[in-house]
Image (cartoon, rainbow, N blue to C red; front, side, top):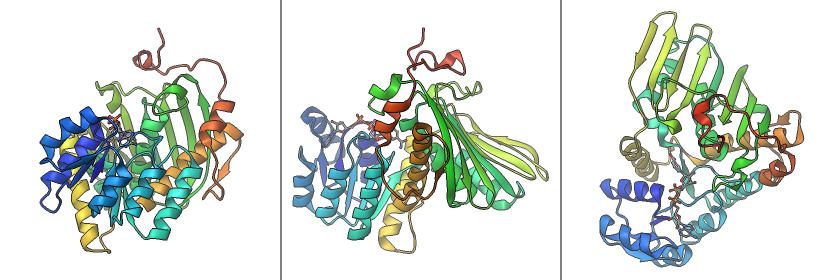
Length: 351
Ligand SMILES: NC(=O)c1ccc[n+]([C@@H]2O[C@H](COP(=O)([O-])OP(=O)(O)OC[C@H]3O[C@@H](n4cnc5c(N)ncnc54)[C@H](O)[C@@H]3O)[C@@H](O)[C@H]2O)c1
């Protein structure tokens, strides 16, 4: 059953329907027109405007919700109450660490499997960078990084997830950050206009992250939302991916290498959905985008925000929840954000 018939809900429902291991049995949206438009495209499953009631009636194996970031807890609870074996939902995990911890605790108590959609990683260019890292061609990896001109609540979750993956999912020890610009606090992905920060991972690995108006342009990439650069540096080279601009690397043994690749939902969703079937069939085949991994990334995201609001370093793992949205609104200065490049002017309302 899929909740939220917006852009991502339609991607998920179509990909479930296209996979022979799944059948879409129910669709939900509070917007009846969207619901009625979606149903014929997905084999006319049951429809409803109340997610909890429909889930309880249908008892789906997989409960998937693709609602905006302000709506997580009630839908996770609806999936658990309906007895779903797996709950799939969209990034970011939550808007606050208090809510993320609640989701973690609810899932732990119920034993329900859960996955969070960081599906860019299935792109051939993302995987090529991972292959180079696993091959050892970069030597000892000491730095991972991610930058996006898109704002925090849209993009930072992706950047941290892929950088952690490239680093081999090390534990994060602490984070420190700064933020600027209040323009995007009223967006449906509420964010400071710019956040930049550092993360210390175990194994002497440094993480550098920037998301928003001040993050560097990637002039090689035309599509604004695809101007994301995620990569790793080691003692013998570097390798990085551009979301809409392929991959490139320089290594001691291989010299300069590069290749094509651009983020594509049609290519990235099928393997993401297939891994859900694999995990449902076999507990050992844990999904690459499992909640546990997404939660470790979310903790970093929240530690960066807490650092910006409260100053200084924030130790990880977090031991107590906070409302980072409130903290940031109380602390980001009124001064307008400064952009890295005029390519960011339009999205940040700068003339
Ligand atoms: N993984 C990715 O690559 C990616 C890309 C874009 C967006 N996203 C994420 O996907 C999520 C959804 O984004 P979107 O662009 O699809 O949003 P959207 O606005 O297009 O769709 C959200 C839908 O949820 C419905 N909805 C709201 N409240 C509901 C409720 N109580 N019950 C049922 N339906 C409800 C809305 O009516 C709407 O149709 C966000 O968290 C966003 O960050 C992820």
